[in-house]
Length: 164
Length: 263
Image (cartoon, rainbow over all chains, first blue to last red; front, side, top):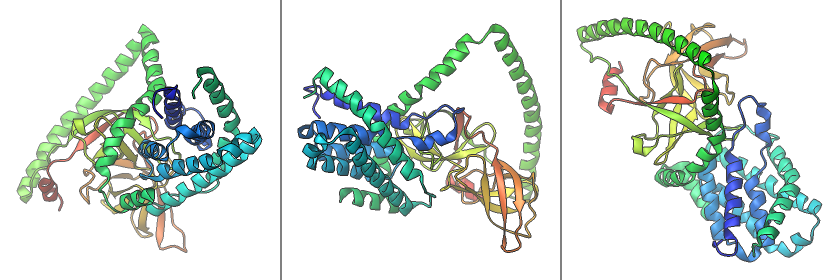
């Protein structure tokens, strides 16, 4: 993730994803929309790893995850683990994943986000008694539905700016 | 591995608080940027409001000020009387609490938890555990401080609890958050306790974290079930938890003085 070769585009997209993650909805919008928030950052990281596997480092992603923990007020290390895990899976299978159709990728994204959310619920459950339920499914579903759009947008940006 | 270690360390100790605070100072600008559309729309609506509207608002505020200053006058007299009584009893008078006004700059978006980000941090002298109020009542407490911002856990978060008493008769209890923005629940209230609908609930100051005597909410329902030894008491929070943009952070007087105050 060095700034040369359009690295700033990667950085900007990550920051944008983090911002979408903390942007709260106007007060007069219905509250249930809050549950539909996709895991933006995971989508963006997933995209960059399968597109540019040689440029993503596990440690860098993990550090990013720790920052995100503070941002989202999650236990330290949780998002680091989730993002590093995603990166590892994407990096291990990037050749295969790239060949997949967008629909198949959606399936993979669904599974990734679902396992990330389940892990998150489990870790939060260690330190507090938050109720949980179908919301884990909802996040996974919305992330899956957003994936084609995120993918096409980032792909266009990537080819436009020629990030190598 | 490292993640698991970090999670374990953090959930059991407070060792990582400074690290968190430091990282929070790095990422907090993101909250400010994400919140900026709302701040901007506030500014714009201030700019475009008409002269008549402003006049009207000004008048309303004037009236409110007059009313409040009348209450304050009474308060001064009551306070003097109270101090006098206390000195007769041989206990020390109550110290006034210092407050710091802070502005909300962000809301933690996770719908499972109620937390907000305010624009004052260690630079303004804030530390973890301080109580936060808004103009109407108790708001929450500081759970994380960065240099320029801090994170406040609201009283309705399901992980939050505050020691309270009934204003009318001093019955003590603990008000726990329910995870629902509009209600708190009094925990372990026996069915014979004298709490009725409409009672004002205020902080009791036990535990020393929250200053005593600030309004927490009003009892909205008391349900007694024959099968349970406890009554289910719901309280509507007094603070405008989802609307206030300005909050007050309370600086308690030194520790020893707090202990003196408590009977």
